[in-house]
Image (cartoon, rainbow, N blue to C red; front, side):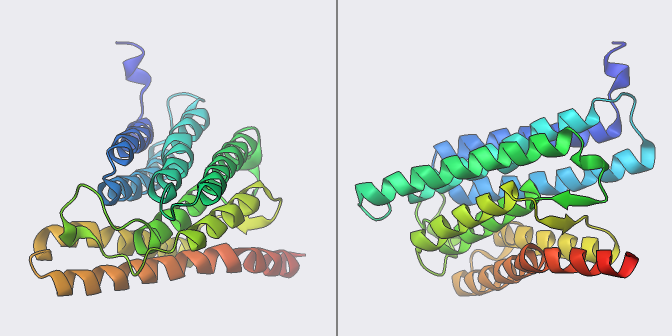
Length: 256
């Protein structure tokens, strides 16, 4: 019981992040891709809340950063890599494409783990991120899979709102995200208006799953709403992915 007394509020959200990532993996294995992405988006909300709790209430030990990275590796590295493989493997009927899908999944897995390790051993002390953060990379892949991934699974058909199956777009994006995570490109940490924009994008990404429970009976309305909300969320995420390094460079020039 003494050990349990050292668990802080932030730890509970961190553990919830990892647990949701694990459940999402079981959904992916069952080819319930829409449910899996909803769980991964919810895990990102938990990831944001654990940092908020840690800043507000502090921690009862010095292992929070390690615990956070372990949970992040489940939700933002293993699960998205598996999602890409599960959705795209066999999508084109080409063995060569299947091999490239496997390579893309491995690339995301390897660079995501490398990115988290680099952050844990000292990167968290820097005023900026070195390489694109793993949650941002995961969000790009998840949103692309929602809009352009597999449109079949065990959920009822009304929950699918893909524009079209575009496996090559997701493959190229996975390699690009992997490169950015492994790079030494500086990305800004989310504060103030940037944090508000990030939270808005995450909320918009999650809204279709929550709203779908209420309006899925109206197929056309649900599909239009879902595509619009997810597209806006993807656009906001890409603003950070592409514009973040430019913003960080501008801030350094201003402070220098």
